[in-house]
Image (cartoon, rainbow, N blue to C red):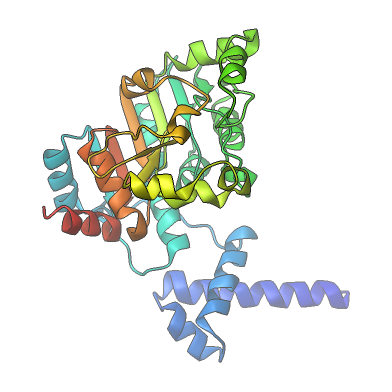
Length: 320
């Protein structure tokens, strides 16, 4: 055996040992770091690498992993169609995102039917949801892009990549919207919508019955340099924006703001979006609690998939 091959095997065995301690023996990252005389940060990196190498494959099939008491409270208070709130064992954001993604995947699979028209936006947890979908059979679905491309740094989490991934799972048809999320020039935006291939995609998206989406903070607009240079953050602050949904900013009551950014979105009109039968929000992170609460207050979503920590924070903020 070559030295390189032997080293690779030993390193993979090392990653497997760490994964076993974390997933099977329920040791914390801090405990593992102490055992291996290293830092928690490095252990987190090793666990991530083990997942990427498929040394560990996380499957969450436990019905007890859901917090039904919180789900009932959310469903009744916010009049939601479906609420899925997963239990969490630690504050590892990667693990929480994967757990919520798996739960969301199960729900999505359960509601998809023949000829469903499914809209997809963007986001990390939404990526985990689509990645974890394992359909038992192919379905004649159509996957659509209701808005232009956000332009995220990690293209695997942007809309076109997610649409391609989901359509591959079901061998489904799909329609891309070949445009950026925001178009500054009003004439260009209107004329582009009239181009045949663009117009056909928009018309198809107007017939969506399911929309899979995440939720962003106002600061998420600035995660992409392009939009950071195009809009003034003071406008967001002045209008007390708390969240971003469907490419648009809204306040704590879930009211979309009358600001330049919201008027520059390229995609399906807001009335068509709000009339979609089931707008499923898949999101994690306590730092997004204010954003989620605002969307719930405005009845901007129909179903919610999140984690226990985030859900508890939302209830605290809303005095519920």
